[in-house]
Length: 186
Image (tube, rainbow, N blue to C red; front, side, top):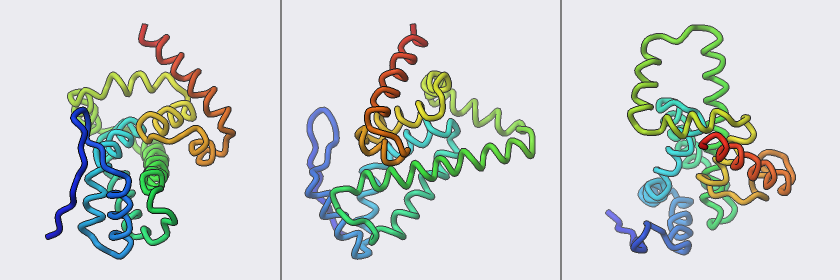
């Protein structure tokens, strides 16, 4: 079994970019352990992003699983090893959007059963309900921008490319969204 050296600061767990790039190169050569290490680096952020985006633990888990599988199957298509996080979160973003569409279609066909009440209860117990209710005051594009920026770590330029918007529009929507959230919190 291979062991990978992690560089950590006292305040948080940060990986060196060269280590991540080395893991990406190994993963591109079909090293499943290296890909697993990459996944472990980003797993919490991916789940948190997906949970806030979808609002349901089961949808978040499905989106993360699908994104990880897609990333592993297509890692050879990644051009720059240093772009792994952006690439991975782009895949996750698309999986979350797909999960939301599927959820909307399912809700149109059938009413929620008692099981959905359980998942909401579990969601509330996990402490995420406050964030989710705050995010619910935002329009879909505002929510996407905030999640991609704060959880995904994308720049305004990168978000603009993903959402087919100008970077300046992303920045202004982000600022208005933050202001709207602050107003809601007061």
